[in-house]
Amino acid sequence: MESRKAVLITAALMIVLIALADWLSTPSIPLGLFYLFPMSLAGRALSRAQIAVVAVVCTVLTELFDAFDWTFLIGSLRDIFTFIAFFGIGIVVNELVNSQRAGRQYMRQIEAESEARREAEEQLKVFVDTSPAAIVTTNSEGNVLLANEAAHRLFALDAGQFVGKSIREYLPLLFSVAGLDRDRQIFRTAMQCQGRREDGELFLADIWFSTYRTRAGPRMAALIVDNSEELRTREESSLQQLLIGSRIMAAAVSHEVRNVCGAIAVVHSNLARSGVLKPSKDFEALGTLVTALEEIASMDLGKPAEGAGPVDLCSLLEELRIVVELAMRDNGIEIKWIMDRNLPAVWADRPSLMQVFLNLAKNSERAMLGRNTRALTIRASVESRGVGVQFQDTGGGVADPARLFRPFQRGAKATGLGLYLSRALLASFRGGLRYEPESMGARFIVELSFATLKNEREPLGTTDSDFVVGRSLAVPRGPQPSA
Image (cartoon, rainbow, N blue to C red):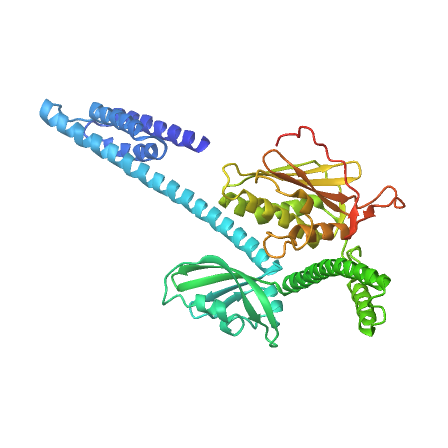
């Protein structure tokens, strides 16, 4: 602002001095040409309209103090050309100044963008270098262009050795995507495949990758994670669940065999008392075989789960929601989740409890298929002795509740062991499962004990003829809070 003011004052003083000199000098010596200098200064600080006003003033002063006679035709033309000269020099200087100013502003913008880009590149480089996941970029031939430290650790390579190598040696399936010259399709997806380290060790790789185009050709960026440990954990958990389910199913078979053996033993005892077959050695051997078979069929179903411990019920129900909600929505089922705030930890085996929840949810889903009203409400609430998780559906209910938890039921799908196994699994970690009929469907209530009990000496369950069942929790049957 101060610079502009100084320029204008200088231009005004020059105009005054040139006019005064022109007035005092000999009229035959015109000094109007010197007004070009203050006009050039005015062009630096004024707008186009203001330059035109100053040009008019300089033209009038030139015409006023020169020695030429003024006629309308000649004087008008002379004044027009003089104005054009003054105005032109002002406009030229104005455009030059504006161009310089715009150039400086553009350079400052370029420098700011360059600095921001440099900072972003530095942050990205720090992120890539410090990322725990392996990050790799390749060209269309599958050769590695960039690999961070985690990538070298993942593939058992020394620092810098990965660059230039073919990704085909380490991730053959990903190499088929890298050949982009044949297929110009752009990929942004994930995949799971087998990877190989430099020492030949195999591992399971989860890969998130995207392809893009550059002037140098197609490129691919991939983020790679070793998922072998999760695979081992998952398979071990699946094996453990299979063993638990097999033990319970074998126990169910043993229980049924034991009942049959008991009936045979009664008949054998009755025949022995009649004395008709008592002298027969075969009859005596039959009694021995029945007794031996009954002992073999005796199995303890109340053995506690080895993996039981405190379980965060909120996080488990969130996982259940992720697993079942999409399938429910695709089948037109409205699912409602109602949970108390700050649910305490419960005592359970997490995989077994998830299996129970999935079994109940799938049972409700099957029961509601083909019905007009399809709604499932899952409610978790704190009760006096533990936590109750209710699965309430509109599937029409159960025809014969008395036979609900018995194995090998007639008319049931497969072996009819779903609810039986669920109840047995819950009993193995001090839980329970019960059924309550509803007007439009069914309600199953999972009863779970607190992870920390107030009185450890108090018994947690009563012995059933099949297995140990946890004591029922008091679940309110009145109106329930809405979602």
